[in-house]
Image 1 (cartoon, each protein chain N blue to C red):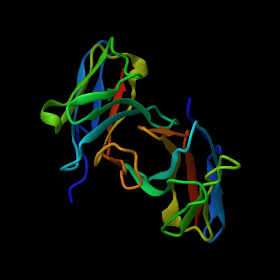
Image 2 (image 1 turned 135 degrees about the horizontal axis):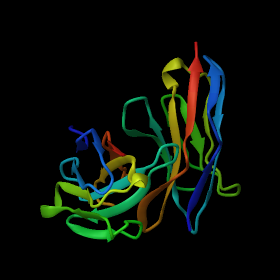
Image 3 (image 1 turned 180 degrees about the vertical axis):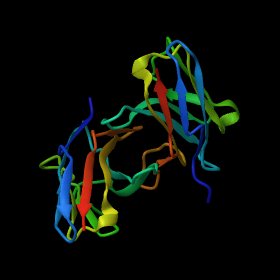
Image 4 (image 1 turned 135 degrees about the vertical axis):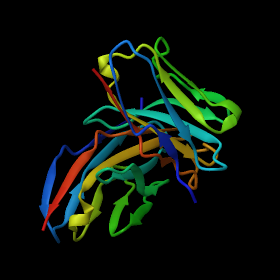
Length: 112
Length: 117
């Protein structure tokens, strides 16, 4: 079945550092890929998504590129801020099966 | 635009008791999802509705969990009787049509945190 594997956390960085959170997936066909973020005390929010190979999703300075050859969708940001501290979830949905399959989440803490 | 509403936000019960959660999706969204998120894990789908019909309930423990979506709008999720391992956050989400297409995004509510003692 479909599955998502994320880089284990927690991840702690200093403000303005470069961020990468790795995500790889296993799926049949051509899934859509997502990054969701959960800020402290809040619900899950869609951060970005990509629906086909080589698409790049971007939002709030974050980017992720759908790499079919490596089955990856790594999240990157060039300069993180304290306000980026949150839990980040990689997820996929298969074609014709709309449910989201999530990774285990990566907790990110940014220190000033 | 109002988001997905859930209540209660927190619930503490003893094992073997029953509990119910309520969800009101975004207006006009045909598809509604219930997810279970155990501490330290990603959310796992329990049940998906398209209007008032069930699309996927393959991971719903049907001996103790039940859900309904009357009139294709609000939904309730019930656990009876609760077990210790049911302690989790229960998330409700909705999307426009459930097609999984490029514009069919799932929007999540704030969740209900259940503690079973």
